Image (cartoon, rainbow, N blue to C red):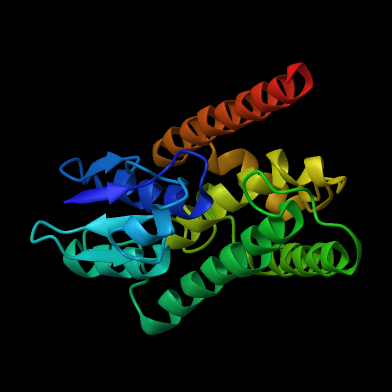
Length: 228
């Protein structure tokens, strides 16, 4: 089994954190050949052209981080990263949706994607408002017991929130939007605590490596443009 992933992608990172938390060392993690080339979408194994993708031993490819996460939970149920009851699992999934749909998606809406200029005007304003609604909701929803998002143990909620909050802390300021984490005490306490969890620490180190590589690539491109 193989997970196609890149360091900085928050959607790839949430699946990697799940893999680490479950101890699935047999899953190979690779950056796919040709990623972000002009023909990538047409040659992508899933034809969707987005990461992560999970390639099974029989060659079947599963796209989309949420689908992959649910598949891995079904195939490898222990240690369990969903709840012990449907209500507990619903709590976890609600936090995952806040991370994915309100935090990460709105940051991407502001940045414009890889290599694109920052968005301005009404598009940016809507994205900022959506992200701040997500932060307000997260401050009310997050549990924090034992340093985790809910249930007092590591769950899929943490796997989604760790990459999302990394993006809030490290990418959001580049859009001229202040980092809202320090102003929200429950989120700030959670963020300080969860970074010590080994699966979180591992995936955060990878995201930092990816961010450094992205900054260096942008620097080199700017330098090449000026020296022409």
